[in-house]
Image (cartoon, rainbow, N blue to C red; front, side, top):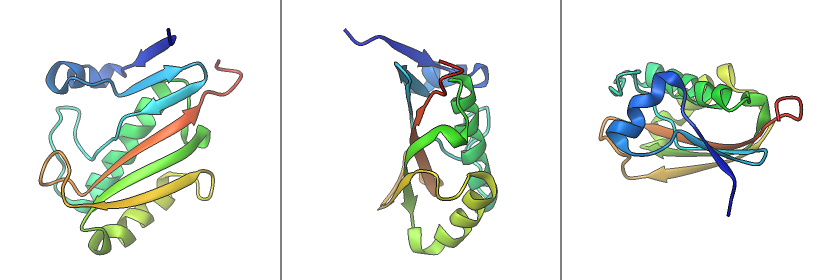
Length: 134
């Protein structure tokens, strides 16, 4: 049996009730974060692309913090993009402001749609809990 801990930041408790999934799961020192999107605490999609991308990174940061991690602990990232060629420059600009460059493996995937037609990107990561926090 796998020993796992469900990670739910206080501000994201409604995700389990309304959407039925955990924001992250910790197994040993690995943290598997569900895809984070640009939405408010009330689960409302942010329509402005730049603000949506900023909220996506902030939501991811909040999930990681609840697991005892930071962006510096991320070892793998996958991002999913609707209309990737149209928004990638802005997404990358926001990412480079908020997330340390060149510190993890990153795969970008173009998709036809995400869980809401207004969403432009979703980011999921795997992180390693630092020894001091383990």
